[in-house]
Length: 132
Length: 443
Image 1 (tube, helix red, strand yellow):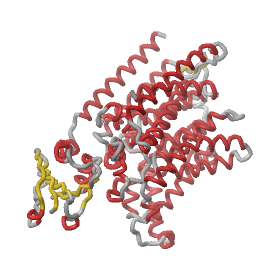
Image 2 (image 1 turned 120 degrees about the vertical axis):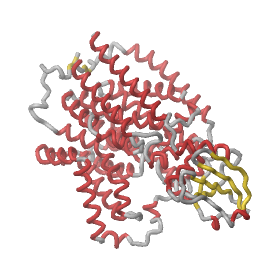
Image 3 (image 1 turned 135 degrees about the vertical axis):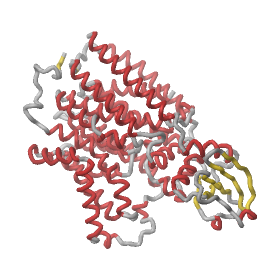
Image 4 (image 1 turned 180 degrees about the horizontal axis):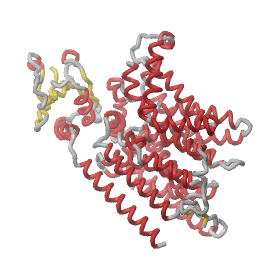
């Protein structure tokens, strides 16, 4: 009975160590979700939660769009061309700084937008603008 | 608080299962109780969201009820203790070491195959839905075709489990979906080994466990944090319960079979196809036993009401149903030889390449042990045929759809097929030897 108890104890301790170590290893890693999240948290804090946001980025990959939606919940983020965004629509302009081929420019449309807020970190620069 | 409530409810249901079913193995009863309670909790959570009930109030009520019932029930059980003295199953020390070692190996494999927030669809669909469910007033935002790539029509069991724990701990930690994915895989392994222990077939159980835990069959997709592993568990459980049905039947087990089969539609849309096929074969096999069919249907009622409310009143139409702008007619697709060739190629080549052991075992047991006579084989075979026609008719690009989802469909049925194969597998080598140290003993 004592051997049995020791087997169970060794198993539980080993499993516990693996679980804690591996979970800690994984959750301390930062992904683009965390980098985008720290910026959007500040940007859309005051935006009405039921309001649609529009998404523009210099990086056309779906990954960055999906990730930005992931961190913007419960607001919905709709990917549209600038021309299709309705007047007074709020636009999140995500500039992927690691994406060096192009930079997000809204010129000449910048004249038609109002910058509400802007946040930057090492990887991204995000502007919240309102289309006039 | 919600974990406390889950434990209380599980303990309570364990006593009910202990009293009203003929299952002996405590592990199997714990797994089934836990799964039943978790599933019921997601229904209640979803209904509380729709009713805009405050989550703290929901937690309080949900924890208080089992506490009082459990206290009453424990007193009741104690008074009946002497009447109920069924022997407990016993696994030898060597058997225990092998089981524990395989679980450790599985844990390492699982964590090697996973990542923070899981693979693409895990965060883009399942965890995303969970995030929406955190907002009592704004979770409706997800049910729009403006962001149809998050698949707003997908059922909400996995997102609900994640959201309940997040809300309870007031966090949005990536550890929660990760641990849920791990626990789901762990429950699959526990269900299988417990079922074989219940069946006094420990050697088979250990072999089955080794095959699932020490290869990448379960860990590869389990680590993705998709809902397919949860569906795999919900497909497995009804067959395990059927395996342990006594000849004279058991009302509680019939009810649970109905409940789990219907609840699989709350995990993924494929679960609804499984529900339809399983019910069809269940009705055929039990058409003389009206009591079984009625109780089975009673078990289906609550899950079907919740799924029905969700599908009819909340979720937008599925892309397969709505057509998603696809111009090709059903008729054209059905008779397009090229589509059949591509799909068939995937079904055969992909299965052989990715799951060679499963394919070999299916062929071997089909030839030697008439695997096709089992209910599981028939249901799964027809499920695959159904999936085949879903691919033929998909409004999306066929090759893309196959490359994205076929291995997940295979993953959904792997556990139940391996389990069924080992159930029918018989050889001298596998026969339980009472002198063996691995033997299942009754103390």
